[in-house]
Image (tube, rainbow, N blue to C red; front, side):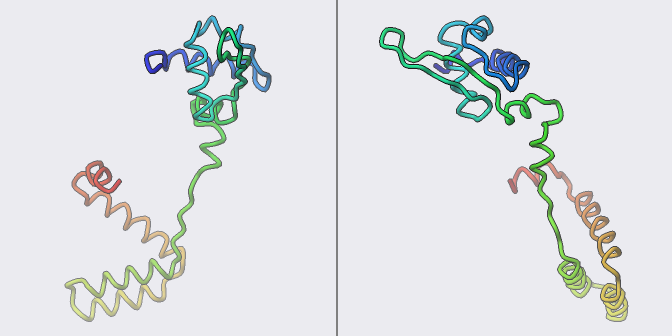
Length: 160
């Protein structure tokens, strides 16, 4: 079965189904793209990944046959150049509370090797700084931290 899976034909099937959306497409109209058993295998594979809905019919003499297929919203997003609405709706927002960031910065200042008077002055400034100032410092700290990593790709690969 694995030798019947064909990315190029899967893409063509998805585009054919997308051109008919929201309607279903009869198996006979999909057969020229991926004839024979390849159609059944590729549509079943795409269905298992949630990219298409499909109806299969069991026949005594023919076995399991595809009746129709229909692309899903996930399938449309998959073939969209920009990832579709799924890319927009699935954005994850990470919120760091200003007090948490402020505490981390103060901790780093206190652990640094600068003089005690400099530490006290920096800690006082951090404590009195408004939220938008902490946000700006956080962005700059993140940027500086990423630049300081010798090889971000290797670091991320090891972490992930």
